[in-house]
Amino acid sequence: MLSSRRLAFCLCITVTVIVFCTSVVAQPTPLRSITYRLSMSRPVSHLFEVVIEIELPDELKDKPVELQMPKWSPGRYAVFDFAKNVQEFRAMAGICPPRAQCKMSPRPVKRIDDQTWQVDTQGSSSVTINYKVFGNDLSGTFSQLDERHANYNGGSIYMYVVDHKPDPVKLVIDPPAGWKVINGRTEHPGQTEWQFANWDIMIDTPTEIAPDWTVDDFQVDGKKYHVMVHSFGSEGGKRSALVRDIEKIVRAETAMWGPPEFDEYTFLIHFAADDESGDGMEHLTSTQIIESGALGEPGVYDGALDTVAHEFFHVWNVKRLRPFELGPWDFTREVGTRGLFIAEGFTNYYGHLMSRRAGLWDDARFLKRESRTITGIEIAPGSRLMSAEDSSISAPFLDDAPHAQKTNLENTSISYYPKGELIAMVLDLLIRGRSGGKRSLDDVMRAMYEEFYLKSSNNSYYLRGRGYQPEDLQRVASKVAGVDFEDFFQRYVRDTQTLPYNEAFEFVGLRVNKVQLKEPFNAGLSVQFDDPGTPLIESVRNDSPAETAGLQSGDRILQLAGRGLTKDNWLQTLARYKTGQTVPITVKRNRRTIKTNIVLGEPERFEYRIEELEGATPEQKRLRAVWLNGK
Ligand SMILES: [Zn+2]
Ligand SMILES: [Zn+2]
Image 1 (cartoon, rainbow, N blue to C red):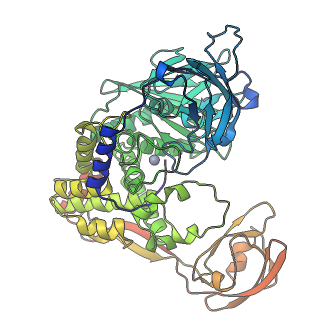
Image 2: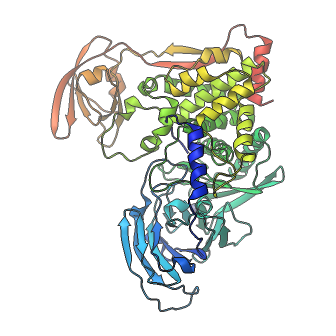
Image 3: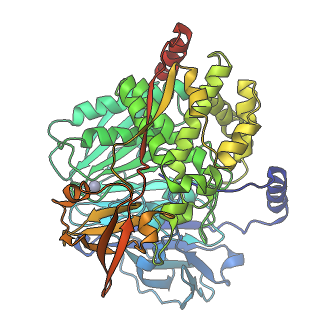
């Protein structure tokens, strides 16, 4: 997924605390068994039906059992409070065999906070929990059940037993007649039961259940890859080509990292054909990708591959090589990490670079894409206010978080995705340049993976290895490159200075040119056109002519110098004015009509273009080819 922002702590203290905790805090006795049963008897209701059967050890059967709905789920850092969609929570003594008609006696349930249900077992050695969850969002974060399919992200469906997330769990899915189940842990067709090492792994296994998805397979390095596609619109005959191009991406990324740890991996891809759904979510042995269009429509094919290149890179970067805070998680509150610019931003960079290395993009397309990213960051007012680490730690505010309160984030924030992408690219080129092409960011990422995932002892029940802090990346990058990157990380990661683009690009015979766009003036606002057809102010830049005129986001522009504005005459009307002119403007704000004057300022929009460096040497061009081809 996407996001950015954060701060610094002392690694040794953090590690010491963890070691101390794990050595002195006794783990609760594991439950004798936890079985989840998922059914969906009435798809049109959008209600998933969940049963949790719990067998208690003797020492726990007189204690209350608490079930908790996570407040958020991994890969998205905003709090969504999945508990709001839970209904009809019930508890009963005992466990009834499937399809048997049992008379079970209810047990008292108390809701003790917004995400926790407490069950009084009254001494029973086993309890059965029932609840329903409403889900009608096709998304990697939420879940959807309708007449077409069930597609879920486990974090939005399954409660965990408090204190027992590490316990093994069993899952049994009862699909509607004729519907087939597939996920990244499917071992044979028709499988409806799974045993998971713990709850975290279960919710890391998004699942698709429908009558009509397709699956295509390929193998790379002896590993099996499955491409599940569920199309709600025409595929235009493009599916087999899509699978072949996904295989190219897999080959390019595994060429950098080496064969992945798993035996099988599943791409779960939806072409939603609804103009609104769109998402990509990474998991250990699968990814959920949702494209809003139909595969047969222009641009959708490329968009899907772009997402595939990003999500598959997460197999290593974030799912296994992960920031310290990311797994196992505390689902009672948002989790901050300063490392999302690495986890997401570096993945953005490599997603694009791998599209080039896989042969799906040519050099020009890659450089154009990165030019666009540079422009986006350099013209954003927030890029001088928010560092890559601050952006990472602010992810709960930025990662598509709902805002009931008006904010100034438009002016104060940047996303850790593009900022991290640019840090990765510049760092990569500096390492390549300063080592004469002998080392690269690829080496740094592999060294990080080896140190923190492959060779580190496990620091939790959840997964192999341990997490890193951004300081670890600085240390490993400095060691691999033989260059001290303290100054680089201080200026461009922890502070907000402009990245040294030209120093970096010169090593590969390129330069970044800043080009002023031909605009007659600057007003400092952006607008959108919605149904009424008049411009709605979307954002107002701080210290801009629009702000000085008293305009606000949400204002609807009625007239400019007495002329009514529409989507059709908007640009034509603006072209009549130039810098320094004072223009009367009328806006509607709620019930008020406000007349003011805007004094148009100097044009200040720029575009950044990565272009050929005049007189680039063969050595510079050689380094560029190695960078773009990966060899
Ligand atoms: Zn991502
Ligand atoms: Zn589906």
